[in-house]
Image (tube, rainbow, N blue to C red; front, top):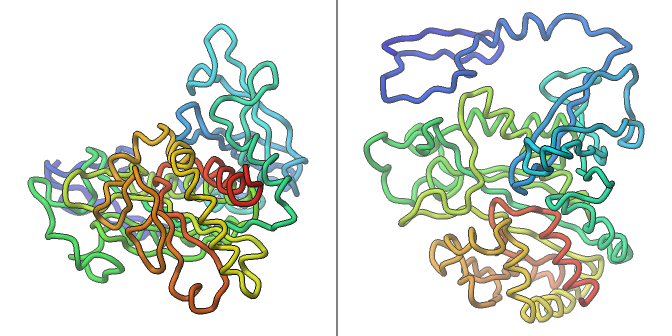
Length: 385
């Protein structure tokens, strides 16, 4: 492709002089201004589009489909149970493929606007039992047992942007960028790649009602992070999964791929995690540091159990990341320390000085299931299991 010009007043993107080595998404080449011609048509007042979103059988990927309702839902309970072909999402066999979608969380739709909604769903088999990838089902029960302790979570979601050929976005096609150092929280065209996607995602999450609390460029070029929280109980899983969906949907418009692989580039490059900040009511009160120290003691006795829960492949993905290098602890050993980013559990400096606050578990991988992570933390720390 020697040259291509597509201008759009909607997203103010102009594609110029695409070389033969540049990989472009087919959907990115569609004229967004034409799309808006139709999306700007008046929507009937008695019709609402609801996009049902769910985790598929991989435990890592999301799926979605839309239905029309003749009323504006105010809560997940207002929405009808729906179904889908589970044999096409690794969640059922061809001979018995109908799988149920149970709405559990409702968000404003930043893509369609108006009264339209995004609907996060749990998945259930034909016999109304949860699918294997439905980690929310048990998480809800555990959080209910610990609700008096008011467990709060904040997750720092790291991810990497790729071209459609799966090469890191912005990296030289036949080489590597300079060594890590200038990229973390960087500024400048030679330091950061893909800020447009990051800013669009940030605003879309705010619009949707997700408690996104910040974002920054990460240590490896083309790697970014956003933070979700504080969210209480099972809500952290709802909010993070929907934030991931919105990120991938935004990146789709830009023709860029998002990967949550915990070590997308081998070698002397940082991996990607989902550092999880956790606190209970007792930790946040005066002398809460004592409660934090008790929690760390409990965590130290269940290291392997947590490693198994912290990535979808029971530790196999995290093996590539938790090497003891690149700001990680060893997957084989438990450690804790104040302001130590090479420890399993970090106590932030400010928390140590104030004597209260939260702990940071740095072990979860970027592709973790937040329901599994939050559940095992509560089981170990709050319930003493």
